[in-house]
Image (tube, rainbow over all chains, first blue to last red):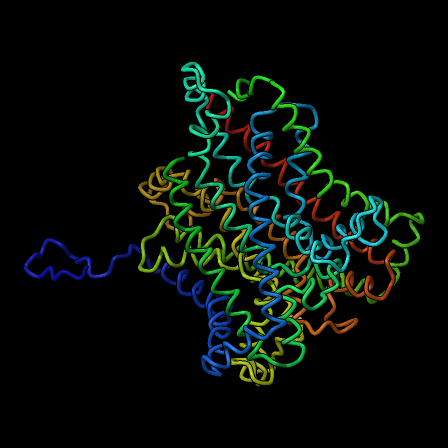
Length: 279
Length: 281
């Protein structure tokens, strides 16, 4: 990149640096980066550094502690199953929102966004009201691992829907009509024509929903009861380590979650570029 | 165009429609409605009691202050970063644009822990230094603001960046060729065009900030009447068997978030109609 450009007097400023920042935008970038570092980068680095401060053996002991292992297993299991449900349900919901037409559809649009905007503790209380001990449905999920699945389903509802919906809206229906005129059945059209175009959006939504579920806390504390080996999730383990003033153990478990978040971000970056290219 | 986009209504369409409505009703709509009915189970008494409690009022005020400060910071930061990401080239741009989304996928408890490790008064990386300057961060309002700003950081950026991309640079270049300075171009040309995106971003940020729970729980210390926010008060009341109070307070918070979605919803519908109209003419 830093090719020497001497002997070319016509170019006043050789492309030594690959940017086009003016002084003002340079200052803007500098100030923004300082704030972003102070708020996000330095604190998250501190988690990784603290996790590694006791050495590998100490880190490994913290995350393989029996209770922690059970919590991580439950969280991963629940997050993965809920993501699978969301892939199917989210795509179906997006399909109904885009292709179907019936009175009150606007209300559904509104309902989809509620889990995103509702404070997580309120979401927890919301779930307690229908699935807790006074459940009008007779479903008592309080203090069971089922409550964790339910809370994850609630908070991750919008992700796949909101990623798939715009792609489905842009999709050209003529291709589907052409496939139909060539004798393809509805299932075949969906599998061979529609699904391939939706796949990157579905995957991006699934990644977001998995990441969100892995770190969820507020919406499940009230319903799950946080019982060790039954309904205790990873973030609750981190919190109890913090409350016991064991920052090293807390940071070790947090580092595991953080690495998962980072992986999701990388996957998302790749997927979003693919979605954009298709758009 | 929109009118032609409908599947021929076969039995699959109806089955799918019914399934989707049932799923959403059971998972979201019914429970949310129950919070409303539970809050007003004994008339407005629970609501009056909640609003008469000075500690609760303080908690609501604290939440509002933290949310507003975090939103202002994130709006200024968000618009600046969006402009830089879309309009400028600099080394590390792609990494930055990926890292910006990180706060959305980090657990709120991890956010709280991360801020504690750096700004904790006893043994944080920067905490003791900042405390020597007379600023307590963790277990005080600045910590709550930081936690709130962290979790809602990408929302403005995610709204503004696609609009800036779509906008292109023609108008800005025209303004500059007519002698407008960078600031003038930004205030007169760019900002009015991204106005609605910024407003959606602000509404979403405000709703998210007001509702932050996990991160605030870790850094605030949850001191009654001092650092207890509204969401922490909901949990406290519920755990102390004051279910009615918890539902009343939850209803207040839920109304604000539903209102926020409604505002975005109406503005979006308006925006789409506006754009469709422009495309036609």
